Image (cartoon, rainbow, N blue to C red; front, side, top):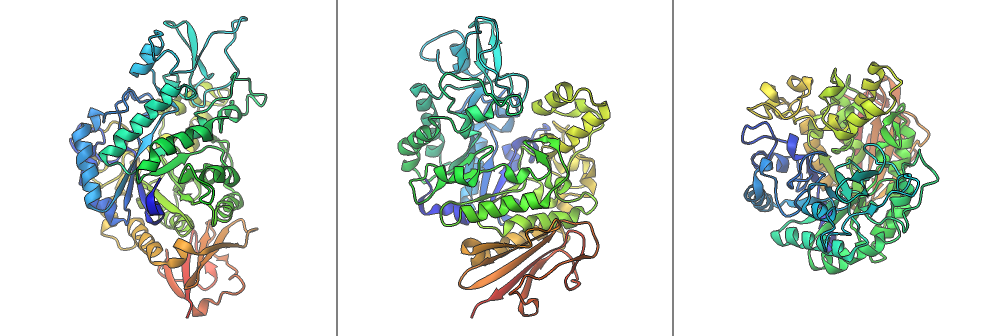
Length: 553
């Protein structure tokens, strides 16, 4: 576990390697490109990097189908390039965490190939089951990506479980040998100098005994059976005791459907925590239901309830991981903000979460306000989940409506190459990009924003610098105001030295009235940050945001 909780004072930058920066001209983002941009990441005020998977992989799920846990894919530059980036980051005072993906492996992994042939000791490394006597599947669970959660293997003559893509076979974590494999993987990277892990869907690794049917199907897809399984805490404690307690490492866990109460079972600092932080999905559900593909009108009150619940329920007990974007969800400007007010809403969204209590994560391209991608043909999508949604879900809708579902829900909107300049291919590569570049790269790119003091990029720099200066952001109490408002999010942070007031308008309306909370006298405050050149009293412009401070004598 992280000694002295160093992660609490960090700001992390997430890199999805394929689309960050191509350094050798082959069209694929790589570690050469990352090394080029270390100073850029540092210039944002970020002093930590989270890498999405860099391991060798067939690429069915863009690296989350791992075939070798002990290597770095050659397409990213191999191990030497990774060590150069790791050393370069550490020289700049930056931490580096890796993705740990151990709920499943690629079906091309050596373990799976030997398991399907019943070669010891790998026979029970995965979750295998025969067909039921009536020929039905072992249970009624669905895959979260494509079809049912079971695939037939002609070699072994049994079904194997895959909660995600068919080529992502679930490991049998109940097998002690599998847990030893996980611990060996952890030690390998920690000994190399990696500073921790983001653990992919780690709350799925313990399945219930007997793998019973889920009575809430089909709506649940089985998730209520395999999420937070019976031995999850036991296995996380084992990993902590045998590995993490011996290293100064941060453990961040992805946790679908987790609540603050549930999270505290794992991260309560007063009760022997097995994790440092958890990634909740609730902040991504203000315009959807259960999945990004079930699109609904944006509901600010729902978002505010989530923000405030996590801020208050964890206060003094656990630590928040703060984010508004990552590789698994469409771009936030296009969802909770507005493409028409791209610059204004991108800045407002930054403020909405950067001044909360916790460790912020910024996803590549978020810092320039990258937007969703709107392709004209579903075949242009790369993501396995997206393609399944188009060709197998809501098929009675017209092709246009089905395509619009992808515009709202596809992860590929977050995976278009980072827009570095207005040059060809957005400056991402001198070759042919592995994936489509968003058409708006000439209007939204790093190079142009570097020279504009009022750009989204430079606003992020100011905001990150400011949150580091403010003692109330690190340690202060949180309080929300105007909870019933459908358009404004207002909250304060206060400690013994200062209090700040954060105002965020989620409205396109030009003259949105704002009621100053009782007890705050704006005339005696310092205006620390805002996204318009001029203020108009208590009348807010579209997507306006302000941060005020009062010092205590």
